[in-house]
Image (cartoon, rainbow, N blue to C red):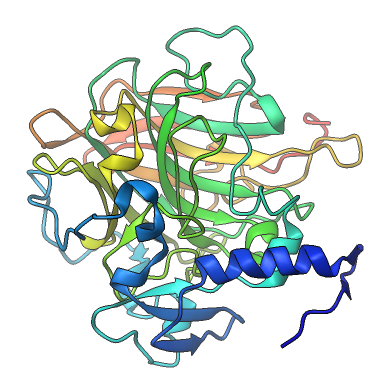
Length: 404
């Protein structure tokens, strides 16, 4: 169809700009074998796995897709029945909304959430579409502190490993909630970061996965499974999900960026997701598995510098954007919107924090450090028990009398 200039709620959009956006969308939305309409309004395109966006990357021109990793981390337990009253999101079968009508992507294809013009128009610019802003400013900082000097109004409540360890992966089970977001360009996420490089230079490498609520990126307030990567401190490289060339998907049933369902509710049913990211010891790609060891895909070693070798720090926890839209701290919630002290069923948690070491073994994280920039707004409390291993509660309401 011909593109004409159109009014969005906020501004007139020029025909030229729409054409530029359409060209970009034509590049990232690959021709589908089949399209599935999701009840939440998403369109899920089943794209032949060799036609997915990742393979447009100049460094992946001759990349042969790795079907499975050469090995899983040692000590990966098989899926066992749970008796702790918490439900894994996948245990019920339909854990992504687009699964609900029963249609599946055919073998040999991967499900990709289609991006549309209005998705791009919500971003600051076409260049910013699908990208995180830099998380930190280069204020003076302790060399072992994670990259969370609160630049750009990003606030965190995180646990992290001590500095300069050699790490080859990380795992956690993350409680899923739907925190409310005050303004459209803020977000709230709960994720794992796998990091290497310098925090105050321009060469930080990061691999990230978890759930996020981001009205700007998705046009709604549902928690969604997401991935992220960068090899230059969130500057020119990397993006969320499959919004640029990078992450290679191998799974035909999990759509990255799709809504997670069901979600936890206060003092009621709790749902969580398990994410494991580890480096294939032979090939060097960083694999992601979800739930009970379901492989999702991998970040190829070629797209990184430092992470092509190893990671030096892992972070787990929550991040929000605080734009101070009306001169006050945002009321965007982190986690469940409740402080750590409220505990199970009320505050959000990460449990069974583990790292993958030099010989590809998973082990519980022992000496965890925690950080929250402003504990009156969002906080974190870590602990240990036999069932949950190393775990923490985290989050908060943002704006309140103590957090003006």
